[in-house]
Image (cartoon, rainbow, N blue to C red; front, side, top):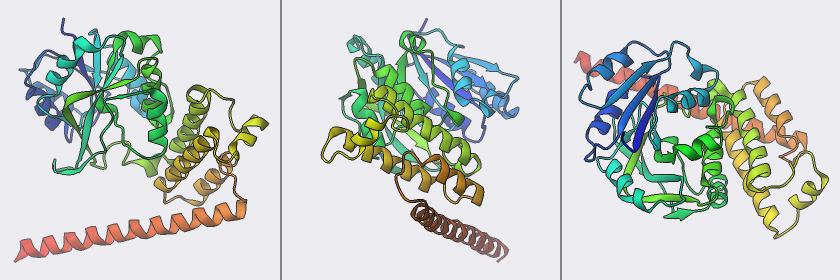
Amino acid sequence: MSELAIVIPAYKPEFLAEALVSIRQQTDRRFRLYVGDDGGPPEIREICRRFAGLDMTYHRFDENLGRTSLTGHWNRCVRLSGEEWVWLFADDDEMAPDCVQAFHDERPHLHGVDLVRFQTDTIDASGRVLAHNAPHPRSEKGEAFIRARLSGERDSFVVEYVFRRAAFERIGGFLDFPMGWCADDATWFRLSRPAGIRTLRAGRVRWRASGLNITGANRRHGPQKLTAALQYLDFVDREVRRRPLASTTPSAQDDRGAPGSAGAGWERAELEWLLGQLRYLMPMGPSMLARATRLTRDRWPLATAKKWALLLAWNLAAVGRTLRGVVRRRLGGVVRRRLRGT
């Protein structure tokens, strides 16, 4: 049996062929591929059949579990495999040809390390590189990783991580946050204990910003994502900082305002991250704005009137950006049609 399972929880066919091409181009073929079809369209099966040369196991699940529990679908896809190491990939991202080789080069040196990762680039729908993302350090403790994520210093994508199966089973699999939002970062933290995260010396993963993934579909799932974001901050308080929840403990409220303290630094990072999540979920309807105001009461110590004013300002700005995007797309369509007609 191979030491490495590449597992794809599949639902979208639009870029699946590109993902499979990048896997077929690996210079090191010491892996087995598993595709778990989450009750998606029939094109998924047809695309997989075109890659008969890959050592692939295709399994179609009749229940579309990802609709109600994305991490539940990830977990059942991982269970399709049995290899010591698991790389949970995606149906729309790509890997550089030397990724598997880079993993196997590092594997003999991973004594006690349960989680490794690649550096990443962001690509668009056509595969053009939009950004070389900020690099990860060679080795990093879980607490530093979470702090960097809250501070917005670095991106992190599910598809850049490879984990040891025994550790994954020990922690009970991926945490179940609504829409899977923030569940990966929380799971990586648990897998990082105690040896930290090792960044591989070579290989890069290309994460696709296509607008088709759950990151791009945030407006449709705003309430669930906001709930997940608050659950994630509770997780950070409970497991990363190992302190009582800020919303239930008076001493935690006192620590929040201690100038120069380590606790105050964490509080600022958590608040800035939460505000970033709110801006990201814009534009919001009236009921969602009211929900955001109510649910952030314990974590955003601002008078209700000021909070509403700020949320409305962010919302208007987001509406303006959305309308400008619609106008640009429509004008572009008119221009293209006229050019085709000349």
